[in-house]
Image (cartoon, rainbow, N blue to C red; front, side, top):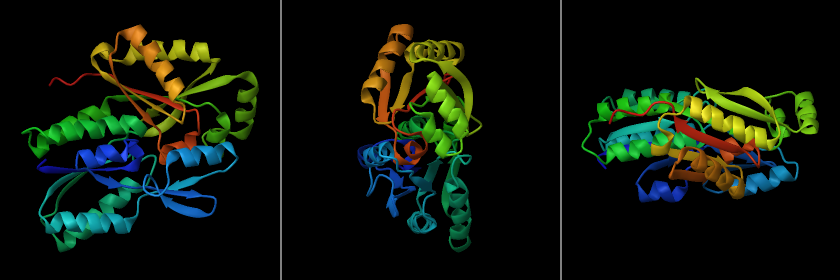
Length: 287
């Protein structure tokens, strides 16, 4: 791979994928029960979910500026071409910090060849963009061609999220505590999506069966050639539910290619256990 790809832990791809494809892994930070951790390094999302089920309220923070400084300086010294495919700037300050540190490094190393892409994506939607970057970096495409195709992929990535317990969104300030209480009583399932990088409510739906039906309707309405895509499904420690969604999508659209991953600590700390997220493109690339 002549072009180095960097990505952070909010992409919800396993560390094994990073090592197998020689990607640089950038951990965001998790704060749980008075201790600080590096997401994916010395804490795993299962630990976070179990703590949340017991009433803990973890918090997250952006990647370390010192990590960026060391990583970007090393890229400059080795004169490597690199692309950092970053978590949405609307959901974390990580992108902005990376841009700031890049300019700091360029002051000492003007030839630093690093492009930072704000994907405006989250979880495995972001992860699918990272995977696209890896695919493209293994071809003979130029860096400019890769960046252009990545921007297309990120722009057309649709995110649909639903959570098992509204209380977790209330803790993070996404909805009011009163709404969470009433929603729990009425079996209301929120459906959320990502709009210009922000996680925002889309609809409130009564019951799981109606939620599945409505989600499939939205996929049919917005998805492009769903049978030919790789559909991403990420889950908050509920693999059975993820597989149930896979079966429903496959039956409805004839899709055969799926990527199912556990939602990492960065996103999971806010969405909570039981979250299900589905990702697909609303327009297919020409290539």
